[in-house]
Image (spheres, helix red, strand yellow):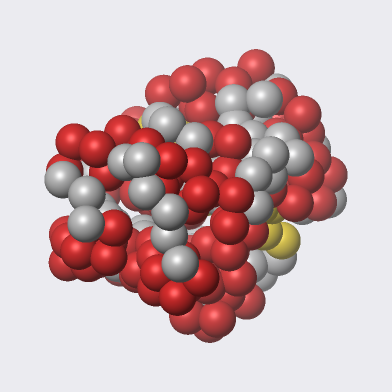
Length: 218
């Protein structure tokens, strides 16, 4: 296995925890939709929003159309704010690990499928995002995982060959695409199984970078 010179994180469900149910309920109240209609309206155009094919206003217009409604500018603003809150619950073990990597000089990046207003909201809300060497936001490239080109763009932005990047994502299709792009990759399910897989792959030294910043000698 090639040495790991950079760690590339997905954002949602890796650096962030599960969506905040309070924020979801807030969006339901703002829209006035029932659970089924809102769930369908929220997710159906989401990939297009993340990919930059829709901006935030266009996205929420699509959501409104799913319930045969029209949102006012004020409703749209409140929905955008609640959407940011939905995805800002921290996965503290992964954030802590990323920051320990950064303090020891190991390059870190983010590769996230995310829309324009979501990115703006996260950057305003989460100052620790500034600690990453580079963040690849899908909407800005008009690409999205699992398109191979977005992994290539992230590798170039990290100034690191793909074979020396460890990519971590919660979705299997994104892991498979990362491997196709030449990266090492681990699917994140929970922190205990993630650390176990890191140890099994001989990457356990990266879990405590303050103590060891390079693989042990053979």
